[in-house]
Image (cartoon, rainbow, N blue to C red; front, side):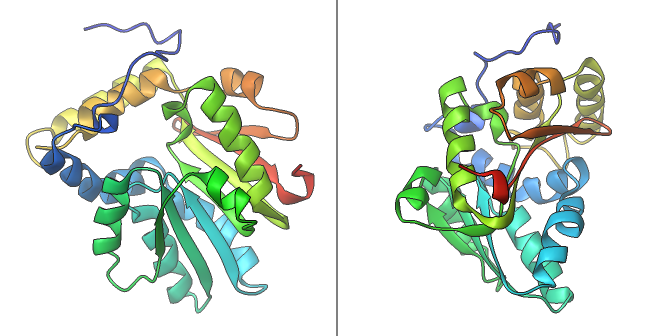
Length: 239
């Protein structure tokens, strides 16, 4: 099927977001995220640029919003431990299935897993040095997106940073992801939602211009190759 990538497919829905999704396929998707995110999202850059420099000044509080299976949180914990640095990391997700699966596989990383919305942490007066999300923005409705940005800005401390990382929609990204995942559809990705949901996610994602148009004042959009978006805000500009 051919899709029009010139417009955002905001009405499409990822299969894993279905509350009645097959639990076996869902858990295999969480498991495979570790490899896919390492290749597609390059979370090491977030660590080198935004986390490690702050951790060298002292212990951090880090919040991963929409953490899913918690693979990025555990990766950050492992890198901090390797570098002799310390942080309290909270992996937050509103889906109990994801949090339960992630907590059972912490493997000594020491990540705190919590099933809640960001607004609940705001109400509790929580503050963090680094607040980030990975491939969350495109899942949200316009009102949910604005709520997330407001909540995450309120959750970051004065010297901290908020970094929401996502896919940039383009024909090239769609074709490249489709070709790459086709190669592993019958092996690594078999029995998971990763290939189909990834294609839907790209169709639902923003272009840099679209994201800049909906972002409130104080937020900056950055584009990175091959097809990455970042929506950033420093804590000293938070409301």
